[in-house]
Length: 455
Ligand SMILES: [Zn+2]
Ligand SMILES: [Zn+2]
Ligand SMILES: [Zn+2]
Image 1 (spheres, rainbow, N blue to C red):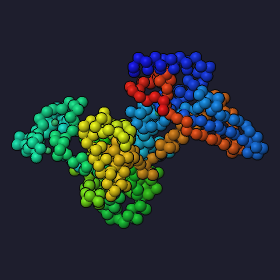
Image 2 (cartoon, helix red, strand yellow; image 1 turned 60 degrees about the vertical axis):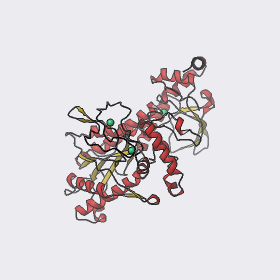
Image 3 (tube, rainbow, N blue to C red; image 1 turned 90 degrees about the vertical axis):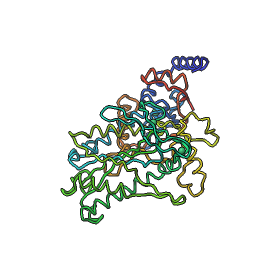
Image 4 (cartoon, rainbow, N blue to C red; image 1 turned 135 degrees about the vertical axis):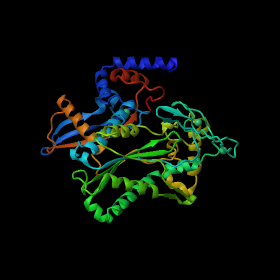
């Protein structure tokens, strides 16, 4: 922070501290849970007695500090707001875990259902620098004794043992040979490839069991929860929990013939056969050959705890971990001047180029260029996997409402007899520089390194 900006921030902080409504402001900030970029709401809530029409209670933001209520931004992206991303991560963890061992309205008996942890990878779009380990030793990247020389004069070999923070990791050995277009197109089509995989899996599992799809549905269901993870090379992988249940979901076990081994066979088959085509370019995409299928058990190598933690960790990461931007590319952005990795720049350029083609408009590659073409959801689950993030949030908000009532801010109303009329409007987002300093001190959170001010 430059000197003048810092003195401005300190002045703002002193203003806030000396303001008569400082205590109320501090309460708002604490209740927003350390959110770095709280949403500002302006509005009012009126509680009426339904029988008499009498106004029982009136709340307005007019009397709040700055005339606004500050609520958490609820982002899942740690680069934007560490506090809200941590809430999201914890919620995701509980949601995945409930699907593995029960809890949050899922019965504990779900832990006896056959369950797999599956990683579906992207295919290769060219040789990139990698870090490989074997028995605790780091192996050379791509050692080739009789390595070919590519048309651009690059010898396709690398004998370096890359450290984990080597910026070359994920970068192509020859950028001119690399299929950037293929890479972003794969990201763009990967949600469709996933959807087809789940369909093919159900079909294959039915066939292995000697049943029609309809007959299978009457005996067993296959539930999913998955997250997308960006590889250093800029393509997404999917990590998924795949579980067998009875016909109505986790409440009942699947029939005895529906085993983890049969499910694993069906996964192997489905992953190897599904394709998705980008017709205007006559390009067909499939999963990479590296497929990892492992059983989740309560006690073995891969426990439910490890899986839930793993999935939750990726739920808060996005493409910026690959060295791209955490915001959309704007039409006036100078691509060459953006502070991003060269590899990401090439991938974004491929998105901009392909996104301009009318035939590919539905892939929305320009809007999702900063995500390197991927526009799917980061974490998804099938309806019957477990509870939803919305339900977890509703439970938390209910708890907060209770605390408001018990601390005397709201009288205890009977929901059935009281009519609540609320009007809310968005009034901005973020904290001023001075407020940021104070909020960090109050909530014990880190300050953003740059930007992040009031917008
Ligand atoms: Zn936040
Ligand atoms: Zn290398
Ligand atoms: Zn080359």
